Image (cartoon, rainbow, N blue to C red; front, side, top):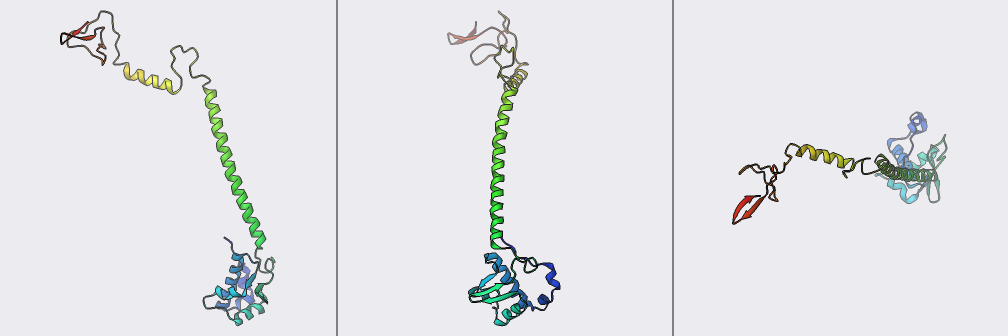
Length: 204
């Protein structure tokens, strides 16, 4: 998107104050058309009438020529002092194009930096994680329990099962109807095992 410039000091310039509303609109619309099309102030004849719904008359053009804003050319109109800081103060098409290219490049560089930082961050996290746990096992740990999340899970297992686990003494017997049977037929509280004999359940 491009923008035409309308400097504030034009409000106090007699040549603009003397323009009618219709003439002012013709002038500013011609200005915006040229900026948008990147023609550096040139408006071909076939496009002149398109800038105002009521059309543009020769009298309108004569007024703008008298104000030294435009001049007639063989193929249309040409604004005067298009990029002059003391004239119309508009940007040349080449300048606008250069700005767009720089903006595209800056955006591409920015996206690449984000991509590079993301890759570097992931690599750094991986190295940090490996350094903080040089081994999956704690020094001196002969139980085979892994550290980190494994240790946490081991702790949870112990907390959940400590209340239900019992020490089984050799020869102990809970007694009939008191066994805490496991799926494999063993008792959780004593060393008896349930077996089937003669279609009846027995313990040994």
